[in-house]
Every structure is written in structure tokens, then in C-alpha cells.
Length: 53
Image 1 (spheres, rainbow, N blue to C red):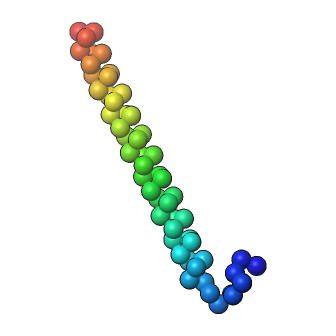
Image 2 (cartoon, rainbow, N blue to C red):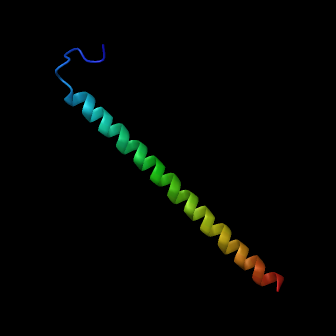
Image 3 (cartoon, one colour):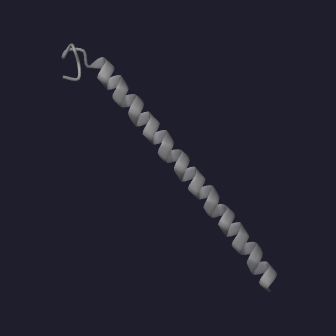
């Protein structure tokens, strides 16, 4: 049994909301890091293309 009092679902709901917020934050941070890395690669590629000409 997860709850000692089955009528007390507020704590479980708060835990669930907290977990969702943590996962959302984590995925948003990963997306930002991936975007920054992609931007860096594009800048490097552009620089290399200019040097090759």
C-alpha cells in the first residue's frame, strides 16, 4: 500500500507534480545543450568553409 491513509492523495499528487516538473526541466536543459552544440558545429563548419575557399 502506497499511502497509509487512502483518502490522503494530496501528498501523492504533489510528488507526481514534482516529478513531472523535474523531468520537464531535465528535457528542456538537454534540448538547450543540444541546440547550443548544433549551433557551435554550424559555426565551425561555416568557418572551415570560408578557409577552404
